[in-house]
Structure formats: C-alpha cells, structure tokens
Length: 245
Image (cartoon, rainbow, N blue to C red; front, side, top):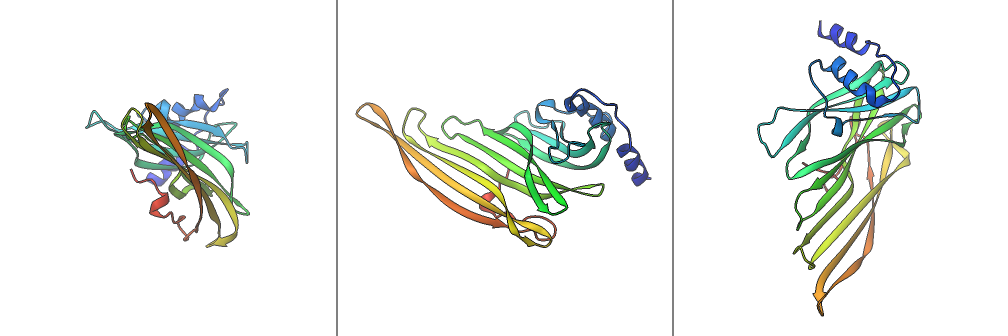
C-alpha cells in the first residue's frame, strides 16, 4: 500500500508556473501534506545540464523544544520543468541544525560534476555563520546527488568547501584563517564513478597593536591536494575536510 501511495504522489501533475519558486509549496503539499516549508532555507533551479529538469531543496522546520536551536527535515527533488511532476526525491529527517551556528543560505550547485559518461551529479550548498563576535566562524558545505532511475541518491556528504575562523580580542589582537577548496573531476575511476580531486588553499593573518595602531600581517598561503574515491555507496570524505554539526 505504501509503495502504491508513494508512486501516486510522484505522478501528481503540477500545473506550470512562471518560476520554480512558485512550485515550492505545491511540491511540499504533494510530498508532505500539512507541512509548510521554511522559504528562507528552500531553493530551486532549472538544471543547466538538462533544462527539462528542475532541482529543488525543501526545508521543513521541526517543532522546537529549545528556543535557541532549530532542526529541519529536508527533501531534495528533481522534477519536470514543464509540468512540475516530481521524478525523484530524497527525504532526510533532522538534516539541518541551528544553534550557535546558523544557516545563512541554501543553494543548488549545477557545476559540471560528470561522475560517469551517463551520470552527472548536482550539488546542494549550505552556508553557515557563527554568532560569536570574538570567535567568528563561517563555512560552506557541499553535498552531491545523482539520479538513478526514479531514485535520488546522496553520494557526497558534508564536504567543507570554505571555512573562515578567527580568535581575537574584539579590538585588534588576534588571528584569522581561511580555507577554500575546489573540486575537479579526475580521469581515473573507482567503483564506476570518477575520482574527485580537491585542491585546497589555506591562508591566515594575525594582528596586534603597535605604536597605538592595529597592525596586521598576512601569512603566505599553503596549498594541498586530496582525492576522494567512491566506495560503491558514497565518496569517502576525511574528517579534516568534513563539517560535523
């Protein structure tokens, strides 16, 4: 009975609208009747690799038990651009969390993630921002998804592509660091999918009072390269490259 009902939901035609944003609430009601999306943390985009398809992220805020924290269930979906019919989706409970670190933005990444000749992935990026003034924090986290028939699969999880941190006195003295990571597709494969090459650039600076002035100094950037291999289920992301909430 459950399989029949799920299939019926996916086959519901949704009337065309001027923009995909108009469909977010309709998709939410079709897939999760009675639940309202959190618009600020939801997004959609026509897939540049195949404009007949539209990608979307739907965020649903759970009932709060802590006034200083929030938890969101997330549904990522692929739909027909003309009718809005949902072709595949992946729903995850408690996928996003906010406490001292809040969600700044949610977006879709349609860069050329060609994992195999017949498989192209798309990304979901989550930007976070910390609330501390003297210990600033911000990052960007990437997940990659692929369609397998009428199934959506997350093959890369929680890769930090940007990290900005600091520790200072709120006036001048302190240290700051930035890490940026860029993904490229390696020609080699592992278990049917391309190896992902991650190029990392790390920079830092420090500041202190000198002669009544705040003087800062940049430390030369350091570069490093990493490779991520598909293990048959997902890409293995080392802890030092991963964001753990």
